[in-house]
Length: 270
Image 1: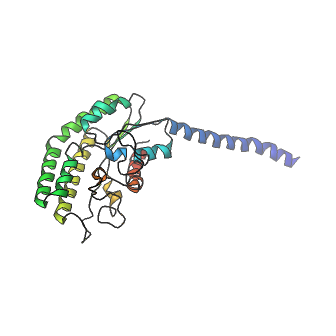
Image 2: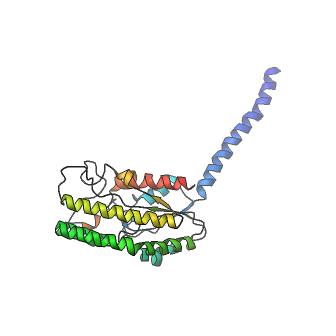
Image 3: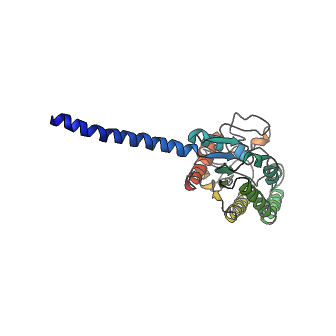
């Protein structure tokens, strides 16, 4: 009788425990399913250089946004990032992906606005003095004109997706300046290009903060994996395929951009 009584008492308790586990699991799934994620931006978000790219926007399944969506199974995911995009292109062509239900937005932007492709070609094909001058011109544009462009774009994102948490990711340093010998461009070119990236990231961070958005700095993640490092996560200059130069490899997207975005998304409750 005592055994039967203990079992009869224990079964409801056990059932309640199982129900709690089931309810808890369901709650977690429900929480995940409430995330509506849109990936905006340029080639660093579309995944140029990460392999298996397709379409006119050169999108890769290895891009950090796509990887995050695969790992986290949001209720919806829209991959709107497009290679070559500037802030004006985001406004004209990508904001239609947003709506009142959007809860999470990621974006890399600004490199094309300051003329990164032209700067890169100048540094590759011409003298260090020419490279430094091109970077200086890009920095001037970043410091004087880009802030207004970023403010307009981020404000428009907020208007189209008023409930969304926006994560603005920066760009990695291109060169590890601590490596004494690095084949390719001169040390002066390396320094100038990294200075340009750092200036650009500072402008992007300030704009994100000014608009109440989150800035995710990928330079820490890429530290020790820049060009000149043995285990680099960036494509070096390739004159036969110039479009991939200085872009993250699949590993750079997975181990550089994805952790930075994941941490930022988690910090804002997504």
